[in-house]
Image (cartoon, rainbow, N blue to C red):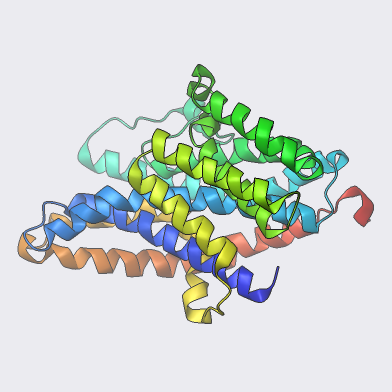
Length: 324
């Protein structure tokens, strides 16, 4: 990808993670004496930053596989690269969340809801604790990596057939009872929008058919999902396909921290707001929002340097079979 395209994706990631932070930090302040209406808007609409992440993932993962000349024999290597890239930061964030959560429950005299079994299951995305509920999206992403690793070859080898048959089948599964057991399929529409954008961007197959496929996916998103989720996906795919303007580094940089910030913002930022709210006058409680944002951004920067960057380097050492 061009530098401009990379910067554009970072900008979108930054917007997505900011929206999610706004949602979670706005929730405990929605009854504040001042600008409560603003925090209610943050709480109501910030959650749709998740759809931005899903569309980006739908676009960028097949694009990276294409650039790496991925073949089906490299499926295991692909999953291993994803594990090395994403799992160590997740484990560290899980530990941080559990420690903060345990201290919080202990102070309040409430029984800690986690046990050795639930913690063990959390290590493998088989349990999502309320202590850090954002981890549910990591479960969806993990399932998505398996799907794209298996489907990529068919998507790129037979793009027209995939648009006419593959997309409808996956959408139907998304509306079936299967989606209750494999959470990815509840949100498959947004990943498919990213896939269609990838086909258009890399000129795979017929541009006309791919465009029709993308339009159909956007229509189904508007029917089966909430309007803000549809609008978030529409905005994202338009920006991905058409935005070519160079992005100032200061605007692109938050996207680099997006994964680290996403992982740790909830247990640190929300707990900070809840704790501080007990000790300050409610007429000025709104100041906790920027304070929480500043604290989590600083800590996310440290987390990015100490945990995420080494994980990315570890992932880069895994080579596909032909890259020895």
